[in-house]
Structures are given as C-alpha cells and as structure tokens.
Length: 199
Image (cartoon, rainbow, N blue to C red; front, side, top):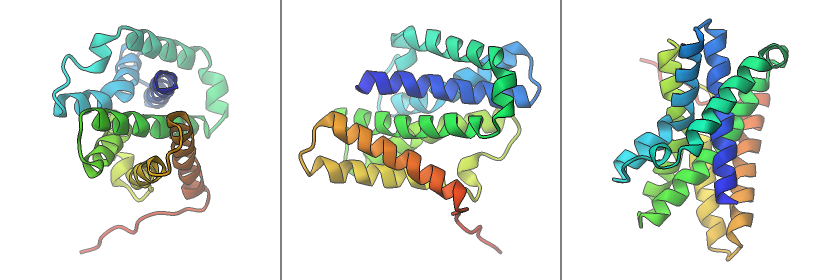
C-alpha cells in the first residue's frame, strides 16, 4: 500500500509539473526538468535532512521511469487536460495527500519526534511545488493565501491521532490521504485562506 501510494504521488506530481511548465511555454527539456523537480524535489530535500543518501530516486530507477511516463502522458494528453481547467489542481492535490504520508513515514522510520515527522511530511508534499513555482517564475503556492502547507500539518495530526486508535496501517494511510485531499478541495471550493499580514 505504501509503495503504491508513492507511485501514485510521483506520477501525479510529475504530471502536475509538466502541465505547469507547458502552460509557461517551456521547451520539452524544460518541461521534463520541471516535471522531475516537482516529483522528487521535496523528497530529495527530506532525505538530505535525515541523512538518507543517496536520496530515494537515486536508489530506485523506477522513479525516473515514472516521472518520464508522467512527462509523456502530460504531453500526449495535454489538449484534453487543458480543456479540464481543474486537472492541474487535481493532480497537485493527489500528490499533496500522498507525499505528506510518505514524509511522515520516513520520519517515523528514522525515530523522530511526531512534530518533526509532521514537518517532514509537509516538506515532502510542498517543496517540490515550491521549486516548480520558483523555476516557473511564480510566487510558490505555499507562500500565498491558499491553504496548502496548513492542510499537510492537519493531515499529520490526523495521522498520529489515528495511530493511537490501533487501526491497521493501510486504513490509516487511506483515511489520512482522503482527509488531506478533501480538505484541499473544500478549501478551494469555499475559498478558505489565511489573511496576509499587513504592515
């Protein structure tokens, strides 16, 4: 279940990054690079911080294959995806839920405190998008009014709350990812946001 979620998240973020890059009119190489950093940027930073090197995608070439597949899927179906204005948002939301879980689990396996695990989960889910937005000359979503990283933090708290109930791991993964995805969808639908600080 955990590896399956990892595959889904990697593919989702790769497609999200590729679609963003194509909207910015980048060439194929640029699109591939953006797809790649979106998919593994947060996980790479996480692995470096916990001393897990070589980082995940260097240990398992399947990640490179998945990102490449996501890149080609985004190119082949770009016209259909462009007609679906929410497609990029949906892929980004799926990746948000899945990668939060992956970061949480990596922190637990390293023996870190739950608060640090939640920070790692948030970083894993958010920082690929931060790198993507910076390279595409956009203010990263995580720094704008949209509730993004906050949802990862809430998801992390739900995860550790469920662990205390004694539920099976697969059930905890599924419920936590659904909570994150649903919260993200509701935040956009009902325009929930954090007010910017003013001078």
